Length: 293
Image (cartoon, rainbow, N blue to C red; front, top):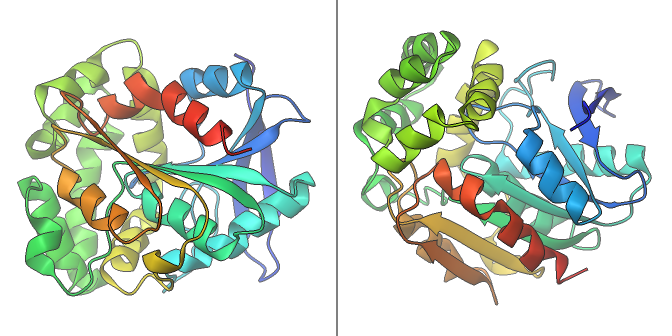
């Protein structure tokens, strides 16, 4: 696939946003929200699946990742203004939006707060609101996530050292180092995903998000604080996708959210993990979302 166009977008509040765009210039944009950590990096697989459906793939590095300016104290809801600025720059009135893992809440925020511009929302293994329920939020997660979100409730002085330690294995940039760094979070199906032909793309996204760790830290804070919108108020079509073997975001998170988003659809994919889910099902996700265009 051709390299994505890289855009250094100036935002109304003076921040900069790193954006990548690929695919047909006249295609409906798919605005994709990366996981935590993650960045604007576009995999060849996502580019190919979007182009086959006439979609324009639009990705960005969340505030504090890559070349995007940090937005200290941001909420999940704040991403909607950034997405609106991206759509305005592209001259696009309407889009599909989606996100994986830590991108899931931000995809929901985009749908909730830009209902006139969003045709459908895709949430792949997205984390649920904390909602003051620590036990429910953490149940079923791997040990590293339990520790990380516990620290997120206590402030940056405690969370940043944890993130910087976890960052070391990711920045080494090999499948083995990432598997070691995320050992408590990766079932066999996800370990295989990191060592097969798509592993390089997965690692590039993680590494790009960990290079500047501020977005990673700010995401964690945003997840355990009020998101800035109510799931019950979302009025655009939403589809939730989850792998049965996921140790990063347990399947209970999908059910909790789907119960609150009116008319949403749930897809529990047996045998899939947190990383393998997207590899195996991204095309199906797009097909369902495109049905709402």
